[in-house]
Length: 80
Image 1: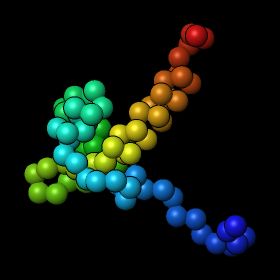
Image 2: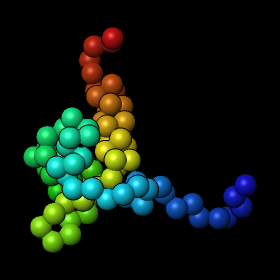
Image 3: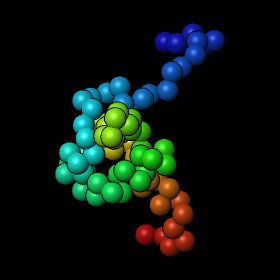
Image 4: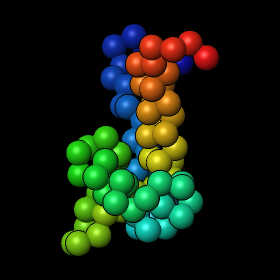
């Protein structure tokens, strides 16, 4: 049980799991490499650029997909 004044460090999906290249993440997630690169550059996907390569984790991809699904659900004018 955390203490009342204890700071909570937010979960960082880049710290969980193995860092993989966007090409590998694309194959595992069904999202294109170009799309993953674009959302990584914009900061919407937790990823890190090392040299010329963008690296991320599968948990970061899952976090993005989960939060994106929530945004789409709230933005939709139609009720499903």
